[in-house]
Image 1: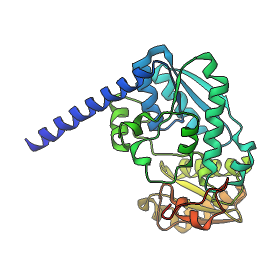
Image 2: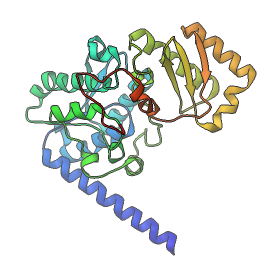
Image 3: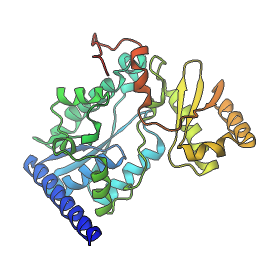
Length: 297
């Protein structure tokens, strides 16, 4: 009986969360969702479509930071939802603040995205509210992109309603979205260590390295970090480390990544940790423009 009761409570909570999300978005009347290809923005896009019908649009930024895998995911999600889906060339890689890759790099990326949406999409859907997929579990991490959202009046429905990652995944599964169990995969620039310039060449190298590891070893969740000196640091879940550390596998991996342009190839023995570069922020370049990091960030 306790299991039945827990399941009922879970279902009721999920139903309530769904109603709250739809009501919030319905109140906006017209919505433009920044769709990345991940689960968070996909849930917001689905809810917007249900709440606002044809007055809900989705926009995906096209740039060197968008991996082909994520482009396909965004396309599949938009098709499943049936939402109008636009592709925008954002060009954030041309901005000095983005290329410089200080800890506030994400600000320049999101600032460019939201400004481009406001300039090129809002005139076609007047009065629309721009929404992103930030959720309640993002609070407390270093997220300069949220500052850009605040400057542009962007709303974060999941965050505002206190909906975290577990509930996002549950909603995505309930709505049968194809990415409901997809591992998180931030933009390619997030793999480049702070202080190392973000260039299209480095981003392509990272993408090709990760594609190789997925195809050859069946990995779903991984990161290839690019450190100073073109050092590649591979992160995978701890259970996958022994496979990659096998001498024959390690030799294949090192050879391929050297072909791609990395000078040194390493395997992180602590395993995959999302956002772990933020732990190095105190050692990175000063944040621009002129922002001092508080203690603890």
